[in-house]
Length: 138
Image (tube, rainbow, N blue to C red):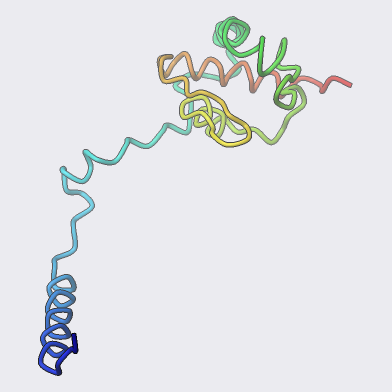
């Protein structure tokens, strides 16, 4: 079937009309409550307590040994499927909290730990940061 000039003109006008309507749509206000409800709240970047507090480090260590050490991170973060934590200066509290909270996918799979309260995830961060301040195992 042959396309006529009139059909081409109507198609072009329809396309232009749709494009104009899209361009004239008002911008959405980022503060709009309906948009904010669809975005996850940003993760905190600082702990709600001192990460060098021995009590929080001890609680993080206990949890780490129960959930993280055996298969993936090794005893006292000595490594396993992952690099050792001792002597690591490249880890930030925000990065650790994000990985613990969200997990990882790909070649270095790690589950997210949303089941832990925020405070318990920060205790894990405190313990891992403490390991990073210790000399690396040789």
